[in-house]
Length: 159
Image (tube, rainbow, N blue to C red):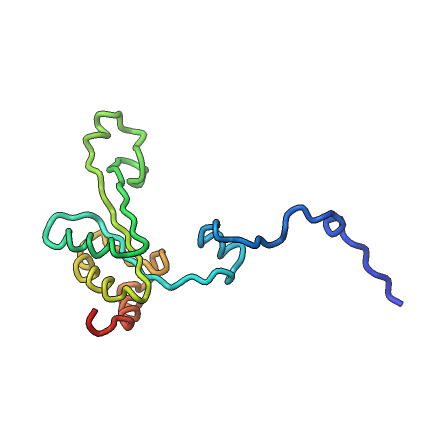
């Protein structure tokens, strides 16, 4: 007759926090994927991030980007040194910092239903420097050469 193994100290403690939450709607998609993988299905999205530019097509590009359900517009202040353009540079005083140009960046992500809009947007901003193609919100290798043409298979006639 085998003896039952003694419980560990952790097993003997009363449950204080449930091991799984019933409602995960308040968690971000990334946090839900980490804590509960596969529990919340996410649609596949392709996106484009591009810098503001002067010239023909800018207004149309912004109009197309704003059609995205996940459109963001960010302003980065110009900087010197290791700030990465995301904040203030410690080497500059207030007067010099204010004289630096700010850079506006547009990000738009589309699901398969918006593939035609993404293609039209890419035709405008794709050749411009500072344009990034995002796969599921992140930069990916061969995004322009492989992922975009595969995503454009979802373009319907008339789009």
